[in-house]
Image (tube, rainbow, N blue to C red; front, top):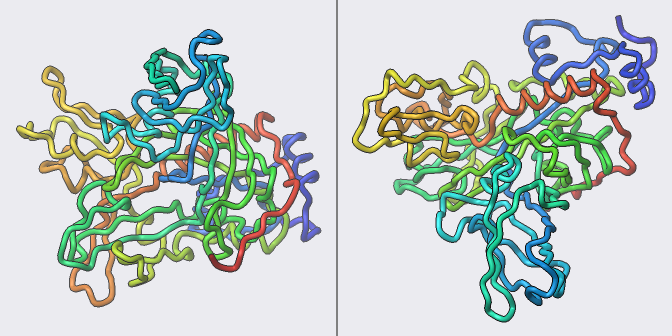
Length: 435
């Protein structure tokens, strides 16, 4: 039954959480009810947990840790961690043997272009030991090893994350195109489509007017409690995104990692945001399903719009999780998937045969179209575009709905157990009309 009031406050909802009377649903749970024909009123829901897991290149880490005894060297001129370049600074740290570093999420290893900062961050969060190489200002080379436990300051910063969905890409031209929106050469003549965005699960799709998301809003970033710090770069009212921070020590490695694109490594980041349902207007946004959320299809060469579909076209009635069946492997001389998997979840073992690491898998689906057999399976969907005489198959997803839904469920459980407090923003976020 709908509550008599048409407006609730943060404190009223937090009180319901504290007394165990709160009604919390993930964004998918509430959208599933809408699809089932239920009528949902304001009194039927208090909090919706939203999430997105995708490539978010605007991500970097600030690290500070000891590598040597005082007076071992004056200053570090260059630093690499697992061969990934780190920017030295901003503090000079003269003669104290401590490094202050910034590692950009799109940096690639100097010896392995398939290993990037996202892979490094995942290795750190998994507790692996990493190699630190230092070139001092006087030309000496020093090495040491460290782990995340030995790095007291390790904060992940988001400068452009949690986009309010994104775009779909096709190549109308005759020639193959190398692009960040594919992990292989993208075929021409509308032979394939890639896309990014978690649709109805997306936080900014559920609260586009930023009634509850603002500066200081508590969120989960890669499973760790963190905070929104403002508007992201190139944000506008039509295409908003967020900045935020979280401590890497508390992160879950399943929610982050590296992703190889046609133009170098990118980084996977996962956000989960709790949205208190304060009024009926907010509820109208929350009740929007994939079928009501537009997805623009653009030319990958220049990003000019071609057509508009919805997220239901790419997420509805498709396989969100990719299946693996080793028994169907054809034992090709060269595995066509091993070399192209953007998250390195597939490798050939001479003794055990083809190996698939579900923990690393991003469910992008590229393996389905590249495997010569049926070892990898999953329906990614195909799209009818005006003027194109064939359906365009989706061959790569740069968002993972499986991970996003898990993050939304994790946040729901934390709220129910009292481990996550919903916080009112300390200030509003404003976006320019356009950039």
